[in-house]
Length: 166
Ligand code: FES
Image (cartoon, rainbow, N blue to C red; front, side, top):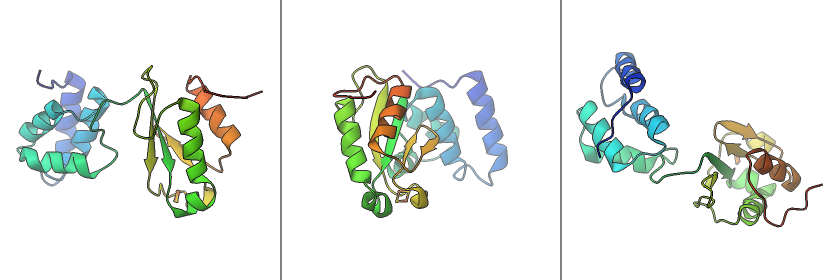
């Protein structure tokens, strides 16, 4: 079934197109807006953006597959991105990623069975001075400990495996 923008999204795309010098420059914000409605950049979303912006499908698909912030598969209600680049890694980032995998019972790149959380790793999120850190949806959580990660996951409504929270 083709992707159909809501009237609000159609207006948002019209507005995006007024703010960029050409349609190619509007590709990324248009994809973000469509992903916000659809949850991920399906083939139908890519086709829609390609037609709406008069761009080759291969170009739009290239953008979607290049940037990790575009979801190429359905994702959970919340996305947890654990930074794994060197400054975070030196301060325990890899351990925090393993901890999240253990607590959620999934590997990075997977979504919990209840569709609540997708766990992902990220390259530097530009918050190295407060390493180790992770991002939940649009929020940063910094100077983390395993205990703090448990609190964050619990606040999302996740059921933690093997949790020993007080
Ligand atoms: S290395 Fe983690 S935020 Fe930069």
